[in-house]
Length: 309
Image (tube, rainbow, N blue to C red; front, top):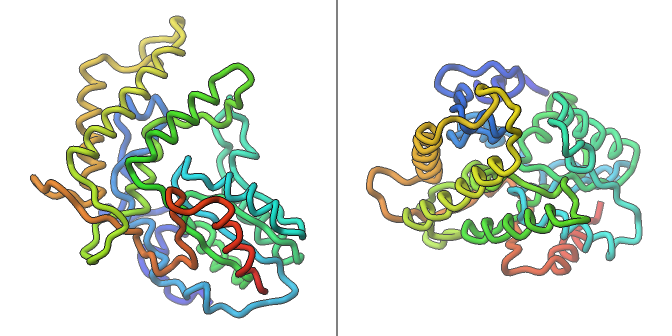
């Protein structure tokens, strides 16, 4: 089934990237905090263009329906799941790295891959599953590697760029309150980075949204400053100099570097003042939901009513 895979798909399968699509190096500030690079990952992650449209795959009545919910952190995927559970009568197993990981420890290497395999195995045994992922690439790639076909739909959960900051700030405030769940805390810049991986510049007449350079700059600065303030508030004085945050000068240099990289990844060129934004490879998704315009119940009903395998 695999045949001669395109170079991007081979790179994703092996983890060995040609120089032009190699993962970027981290700067000190970002590496120490644990935020992934904002550098463009488009070339590495858009291999799904070469995949068969999942909506055209054969349906298998003896296999469990799988719904893959993709989207940035804090767009409302968990709330959609809760609404779906209230509607569906049959049990649907939920998989999410947040349900597996210890908030006090890094996610173990290979945990996402193991989770994806578990989802596929459950489907093959006839169990319905709902999977949370930031991007659907790894799931689609694993289906190819295992040479299996299951009834799966990919749904992208969207939240406008400007709303992400408000959602993350509210989420983090609640997570740090007495009795709050520390698993719910999110590094403030991560959703912006993820947004730039999922959405980019388009020439379509009716884009999903229009972003201005000023808007992106202000939002990034706000989130980056929140990130640094949070890290400083919990930094242990006993840490060595190498373990502490870099000097202020380095932090500010990194701030400019990552802000410019985010702007570039979103499609801003030179002194361009605004860009029209759309989901990258949107034809790959069976559904795209806007949680600012659609209620969790409405989205859940659509997912439920179209489960007909």
